[in-house]
Length: 327
Image 1 (cartoon, rainbow, N blue to C red):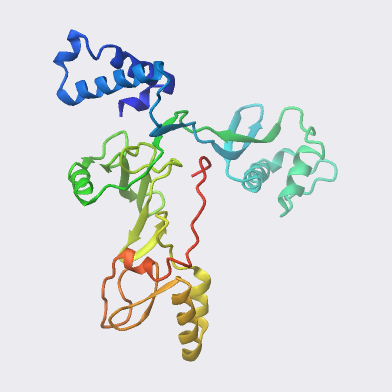
Image 2: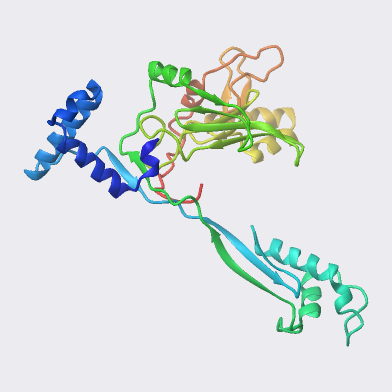
């Protein structure tokens, strides 16, 4: 979207420019829907001047916070490198690996053993000294940092209604496929959501990656800036952010696996009542809410997600919306 390339203040100025030009000769050359939009803006400017403002229908959310990391800087006579690590422990493990690979620089000096100790902290202390300044030409720094996200504000609707069947069909038919090239793997874009699917040779997996930052705010962005997303592998829901139903809790799976037949009947009955499982309308088999197909051998009936969730709607807590936070 073009709006993604401008700051909120610039978008506000462009809207006001459109309103100011709504009745000019230049506006007559615009397509009808653009001309109607400019006229609406002009009416809003007039009403605002008369202190008759319409209710807001959208809001601007600031850039999301970056990812907290630990920055490890290691320098020697020959190089000076800095790299981020997800945890402090991971950074220290990397520093200890560097120390062990350079152990020949200190082995045999004073009380330093010929081989580095197995304990990471002890190896680091012996190499650099207790105060970290035992080697004048080498050293390290370890400090918390933040990897910033793209600094971009987002416009979100204050009232969210997911597209109806006709609108959703139009958006689905308008999906665009981008073939893999030198800039990245292949992906599908639908309603601004990018879904990448490709072979990851480094990790030896088929990787599916969903990017939501460019999601269409007119159709799929909720007031808190998030997108209702459900990920299904075969018939199993592995991720659900729709507030309709959630994946099968691992603790319940463990209880059912360990239960005897009589215990399983009781656990399943309670789980269905609590909304953690659903009962097949054909065979009454208790199924985890993370699947939409009955798992009883020979049945396999598909049940819509809405029907699954309705069995425990009264018992399912409504999650509180959070305006901003890490995704």
